[in-house]
Amino acid sequence: MPAYNAAKTLERTVRDIPSGCVDEIIVVDDASTDETVTVAERLGLRVIVHPENRGYGANQKTCYDEALRSGVDIVVMIHADYQYDSRLTPYIVGFLKEGICDVMLGSRIRTRREALDGGMPLYKYLSNRFLTVTENVILGQNVSDFHTGFRAYTRHVLETNPYRLNSDSFVFDTELLVQASYSGFRIGDIPVPARYFPEASSVDFKNSVIYGVQTLWTLVRYLAHTLGVKRSPLFRARPSKTGPFHQAL
Image (cartoon, rainbow, N blue to C red; front, side):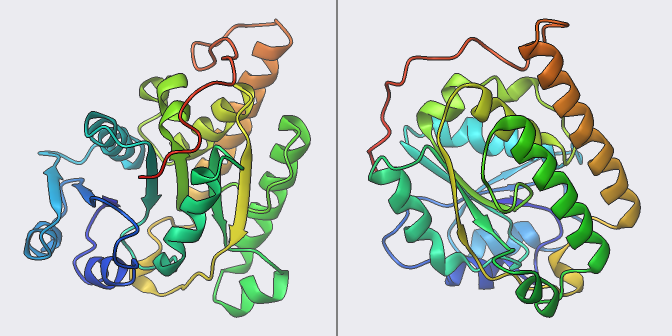
């Protein structure tokens, strides 16, 4: 769980995770100014604290580094802000455990009406639809929400793709999915209810615009790399389809 000022929502997010479906919960605090660390420690979670705010992408790098060092086969990332319904964790994990997919995403957009009635701002919905459609066309995928904060990866995905070279900002998520798609991993999604309230989303309009531009630039880099125009260190040679796709957390 990447966390920043999540003291009001962390416990509810953790309590909703069904008992027994994960072996360990790692919280990486990105120099919060509230009581996030205190709450996490009270809940008995493994807590790692950044001494200074490094950014959303840098937070996830620490999350995945620590998870891989722990020897797990499946890593689930969920925001600590209680926006996503963490009760669905075992269902997302199941697709990876059974070897159906290598990456699973929790989609907030089963239908337009559900997304908007659930509180998603109209500008976020429209930008999400534009970016997701563009990504699907360029990457050859059929994912309904590329920009969710609830996702799961097999260990092989994280070990194959050089995520440590990715941005320290919000576009880290996009870069990792583009890398996974380039490497030939199977990406799937399931609908996940999302909640919108003041503590549940830290990306304002300005940062959303920046994120959108960075997402499009990532796709440009991907196209330049695949077409041989300009190689990018973000993308490695496609791996053989072997690895621990079927093992549980």
